[in-house]
Length: 323
Image (cartoon, rainbow, N blue to C red):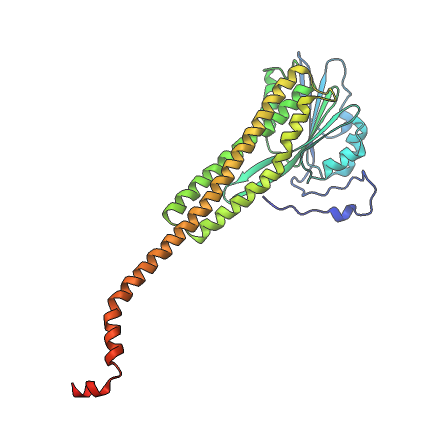
């Protein structure tokens, strides 16, 4: 997994809740998109100022999505607009958070991670996604535009399913479900590369193949550590101790929980496959060495009679002269 450069030293000595961006800047400018909708109508626009956001009214639900987290002043303004705790804003700006869920009086704060796979580099890229579920709004924060939420936007535009007819909890579920579904796309890409490495391993094991196997094994270990907490978080959401989800939505959250379990199990199987490939590599190298040793043994046996004769008579000058 790609290593991050952090700027945690900037926060040393600052009080809790200080807004300092400590991650990598992955988009040149911050962009904000706003959806305001109910069962009958939908308003969608790109906004440049929070003044363009009117508070929720009636049955309207607001969804504000932010791409780019490197503007602390904007984050502070969003915090004032939606009355968010400074510690929540601090966690959003610190893009090295583990998945977690924190409940406040009026909203639920969720942190999860989005992953993408670079097949050429055999590297997994990780990005933080933060979600805030309020009474009539959902806020989502991404490090850069990834298109991961585009299917949810299309469903809102087409008024398909329950999104437009339900509360913000269904929107929060849909966003979380989309993140987990993307995990399987990445897992398929990694599995394809593992199959290619396995074929190369069986035909011609090389040091390059060994390095690729080690790299994928390390990447999957980092991925497991990053995803493992998500299972418990979704399980806590299903228990719904703080009442942010309707009973009908809990059923859908259970489906996301099942998907997370399935992903972790599939990831474990993939790690076992990579470990087995390392054993195959070592066995192949051992067999190759054994073949070379056998060849050298045969050559040695062929030259052994000549070596024996030369050893007996080679220094016996008297017999050589007599002959």
